[in-house]
Image (cartoon, rainbow, N blue to C red; front, side, top):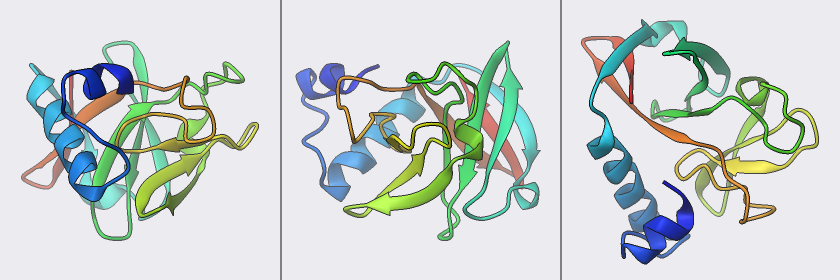
Length: 137
């Protein structure tokens, strides 16, 4: 689901916090199967980790406030699977990761590149189930 699809469906008007919450709920609602990937305590705050789920590399992040995010690990600008090694931060209150390759910044909520809104990475549902982090597809 791209940002334009979400905007067309009336789910978002970025960048308000309410909109990002609605996007996260929409992504969670799409998950049909959940795959356990690690214990919650295995994830260090503000550091990414990569998980292989159904043959897809997924970058998983735990922010300082304890929230979990999952996006595609492939940087669309370089083609390298490196986003899990990016620098976690915020832009206008939205959690982000900067690619370690060319430093483009991606929203952890929508997957949209904040430096080039025409480019995005996939966003995956993620949840905590009895201290186990699960990624939904």
